Each structure stands twice: as structure tokens, then as C-alpha cells.
Image (cartoon, rainbow, N blue to C red):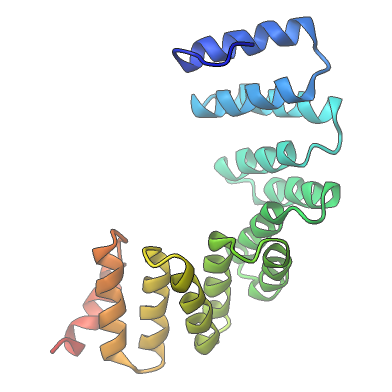
Length: 208
């Protein structure tokens, strides 16, 4: 394997050649899968990740990638199953717990989502996407104070994380604090977040 490549196809070809010489190398299969994902070749990437876990049954990252492929084709059950497998392989790996929570939210199940996210954040307290998902889960639970608390934690660490401002706007709106809702919705937009048009319409009467 070379240290650098001119393009992704050259890298893929080199990985495929390496696999011919050493078909049992889980890392080669995993890296090939990631490279194939960059070309959106889902089927070939899935096969590579399956080969990875066949050779290394506790390769948690490969299970996460397989879950992502399932999600891409709308298979929530498959996504859940693979991420649960990843979490069993490496309990302190925060990513599968966050993905498990995402599936729960897609199913309208905020309580188990919160439980999974707390596990993710136990292992990585600065996992911003997990915190953002946690805010969404609390919003679904109508616990707007917790939404604001989590979002403020996010902004303290990542001042330009636009979804947190949007979630704060939604929470303040539900609490009847419309001036703050307008303020944070505008801030989210300034940072490039596409605030829902319906929400912007609801904010119009509250603009001074």
C-alpha cells in the first residue's frame, strides 16, 4: 500500500490487490468499504464490511457502517440491529449508542432514545451530535427546559452549531417566550441553518 494516492479509484485498486494477497485482513476490507462508500457504491461497500466482520467478528466500526447502509435504504430495523451489535462488541463506543437513539426517535420513542444517548455521552461528553439528538428527544417529551439546558451546553462548546439555536428557538416558542424564539431562529439562519418555513411564519406576528 502506498502512502498517498492521486484518486480514490487508485486507492480502491490497491486495496483490492492487497486483499488478493491477504484475504483475511479485516482492516483492508473495512478500508475498502469506506472507499466504496465515498463512491456511493452501497452494495459493494456492504459486501466489504460483511467480509470485515467475517474476519474480525468484533470490528465495531464495520457494524456501524453496515447500520448506516441500512439507514440509507430506509431499513430502520437493520440499522438498529447492526448498531446493537457494535455496542455489544465495544460497550464504550459512543457512536452506536447515538445511532440507536436516532432509530428510536424515528420510531417516535424518545424515552429509550434518551437512555441510549446518556450512554453515548457517558463515554464521550463532548459528542455534539449526540447532545443535539438529546435535545430533540427532550423536545419530543415536551421537556423544554431540558432542551434549553442541553442546547446551552452545546453552544458553550460549539458556538457556531446552528441546530442548537434552532432547537432553542422552538423550545422558547413552546414556552411562550416569543422574543427569544425570534432571536434564536434568526441566529440559526445566520449560521446557515434552514429554519422550517412554517415556523418562520408562526414567528412573524412576534417580530417587533
